Amino acid sequence: MSRNLPVNANRIAEDIQALADITEPGHPWTRRAFSPLFLEGRAYIDARMKAAGLETRIDAAGNLIGRRAGKRTGSGTIMVGSHSDTVPDGGRFDGIAGVIAALEVARALSDQGIQLDHDLEIVDFLAEEVSIFGVSCIGSRGMTGQLPETWLSRETDGRDLATAIREVGGDPSTLPSQQRPDIKGFLELHIEQGPVLENERKDIGIVTAIAGITRIEITVEGRADHAGTTPMDSRADALVAASQLVLDIQRAAAERAKRPGHFAATVGEFRIEPNAANVVPSKAVLLIDGRAEIRNDMEAFCEWLDAHVIKLAIAHGVSIKSPVRVSDNFPTPGDAGLLKTLEGACETVGARHRRMASGAGHDTAWIAKVAPAAMIFVPCKEGRSHSADEWAENDDIALGAAVLFEAVREMDKQI
Ligand SMILES: [Zn+2]
Picture: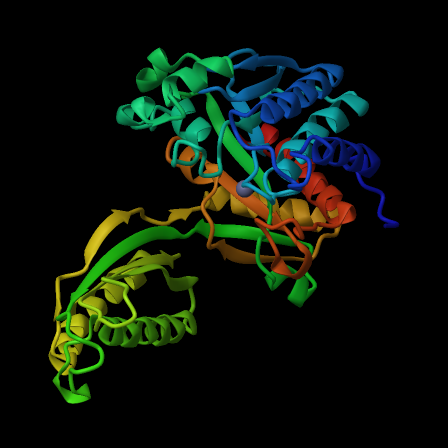
């Protein structure tokens, strides 16, 4: 890249490679939260933070934080970060790119002898991915008093979450009272995990909103009968009705997705009973994962679904209980002021940008509940993510880090 960036692309490449090397052998690139490898990765990041002149600590929620004091004591904190944990067998850049880009912002400020008015904190959030405890975004929820207390007693392999947080250096007993009123602005860089930026040849996605996630369970009940003797026109086949429902959901979601605002719905879990070759299926349970940038779209989809299953049940001679919302999170819009700041930063460094929603959840969604927050995406190859093939070009990450650098400087003036 011929651009003259305020950040050092080589340093970014070196750190991302060093973390990629800390992986389960035979399972690239695996460094799951709470594992010895995770701690090894963290020790590397901690050392790099210290080498950049940051004062490091682990907060109560087990987040690794590197701090650079500002000139105006007590004027609050600008926070930049992401997560260094991975899913199994994937995630060389997911989260890691954001942690290292944030660290590079701090280094670039030092290189240029810039001291901000505000404190700057670089954060590696604990366990953003679904961890061995079955829950995600532990660090960002915990930092802001949003971690459900009941989660602390979740147990895996004879160890509960409270113990695991303590083992990484946190203090779970103080989590319910955690607050960070000092955070004046939060930014996260992340790989897109989708193909839009690459296809449109854009450098940066400015994330307008993190889609809300609604999970809906539907139970279809038919009648078990002999698969050999029951005539085709005398069956109440739960699987056939459920299969039609899957297709109808796909069609309805595809229609809605044509309109402005990100929308997606997926039947990702499906099980049938008795699941035997010679028995007409008596029961099918499916779980829908719905994502919407606009809350009204999700409400409309749920209304359609409620009405549709009644019609479908009659047509197929089965019974379908009212769809149950197992979980329901609202979309999180990016802070309007920060979105403008990020656009300005893109212009400053010459990055081609567009606004877009995030279909995936991120730590930003939790920080956004207590402070102005926004995130940017950088392209990733063919949109592949959560896979060993996940790839992002270092120049793209460096350009994203430069956008963060400019945005942080602007935030320091504005807030
Ligand atoms: Zn991530």
